[in-house]
Amino acid sequence: MTYLDDFEFFGNVNKAHDFLDALKSGNFLFSLVISYTETCEIPGITFAGADKDSIKFTSPADAEYLYYGYCKTIDKIPMTPDGKPTPALLTKTALESCSIPHVVINAGSKIPPQLPFIHTGLVHGKNISVESAMSDSQVSQAVDYGRMVGRSLASLTDCLIIGESIPGGTTTALAVLLGLGFKAKVSSSIPNNPVELKNQIVNLALGRLTSDNPYHVIAEVGDPMIAFVAGMLSSASEITKVMLAGGTQMAAVLAFASKIGFNEQNTAIGTTSYISNDNSANFTSLVSEIADIPIISVNPGLENSNFLGLKAFSQGFAKEGVGAGGSIIASMIKTGNNSTHFLMLSEKEYHRLFTSL
Image 1: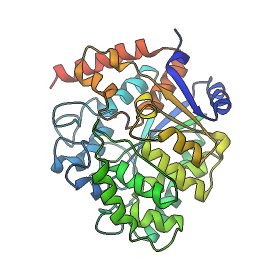
Image 2 (image 1 turned 45 degrees about the vertical axis):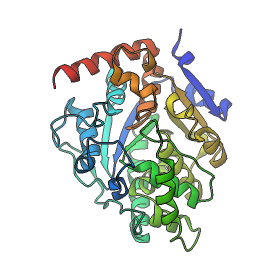
Image 3 (image 1 turned 135 degrees about the vertical axis):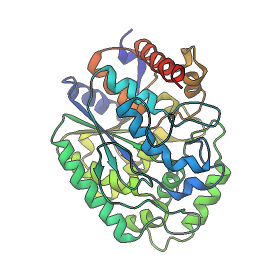
Image 4 (image 1 turned 30 degrees about the horizontal axis):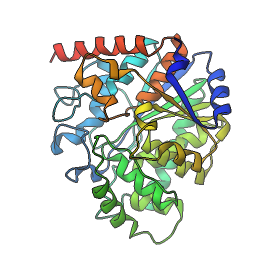
């Protein structure tokens, strides 16, 4: 069985094959954009953190774990209240299995990570249920800075992979998608997607919209990550291949980028089968509605794991995040290894983590 058996293609399938063929060189660069929206502080909206007070540490801790194999801002890796680990475990396993270099970009994280990172100076997003996420000028600045960083990183690689870590980001993503006119249903970090709560928050936010200007939509109901990564995509895709690594949030990035311009020929979304198979969302049809690009979905094989914490991903917990899907896809392309091998490496890392706690 080859790694291609673990891939499924959606959207423009011909472009998916062309995209993969162009990556045979195996020259990848992974970028992790960490950010924050106060929307995540609404009770019940996310599982990205052990409790409300620890959520703000999730993104910097994800970044630290990728670098060090442990965290510095908190004493253990981000996990759900019942001990299910961050999807960064999958990302770290994938990147290290084939020596893909990575860089961290702080685009509005409330807490800076304790490691070298690209500092943008962007401020975090506000709670969209009660106020505007950002000012119009902050959105413009995030897009401009994203374009600068995207241009620089794209010149270093044949494929720039962009992942994100922003707790509560599926809710702001839903608001942005609906605000930009797309009929979206989005995934969640928990199996029982809190759809009613998300819709309630999103409807409050959308009620403040006074125009359909894309910048105004992001300012009212979005978050800094969406603006920044859309800027990265718009400039980077003019220079090199770009893989947006993620699910719902990357659909929102794509929706905004479709309004400000990007190169479809050089763009793909890489995600996990846990997103593409999520019946509570409409991810694949949504992306096809936004842009004529391929979706490459990978099944990491975690349903076969001996560890309940890893198996949980295949049962609807987290599903994706920290660029996991795109990283796994890149690692398989570069090494030729399939999901059986990836599962073995993931279990080794899981065992290391949970015997060292």
